[in-house]
Amino acid sequence: MSGALCLASPWRARRAPSGRPQAVPRHVLLDVPGYYFTGDGVKRDEDGYYWITGRIDDVLNVSGHRIGTAEIESALVAHEAVAEAAVVGYPTTSRARASTATCC
View (cartoon, rainbow, N blue to C red):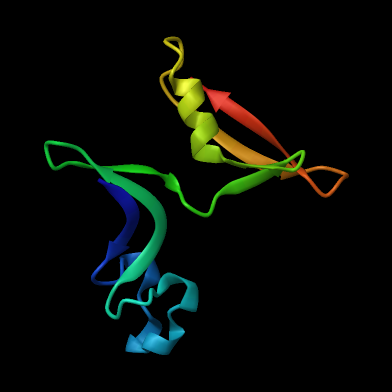
């Protein structure tokens, strides 16, 4: 099972100052009242553990192709010599973005 990670109560970084709910940014609220959208994808395995799969909204436009950073990271860690990977985009002189990866 997979989907978007949503919480029934706001996490520490998203608590509204002085208890003012209107101060919580609109993009973290979902159409389902009482749930907060973290922006992360999640999957649950057969043992009931949750695995964060990456940012849902983290997409790069590389040469006209929309590529998720999690997809690139997943392909990198599939290699036996790579334990972890991080991919970030950076602006180029054109309207597209390029990506760079760090592996260890």
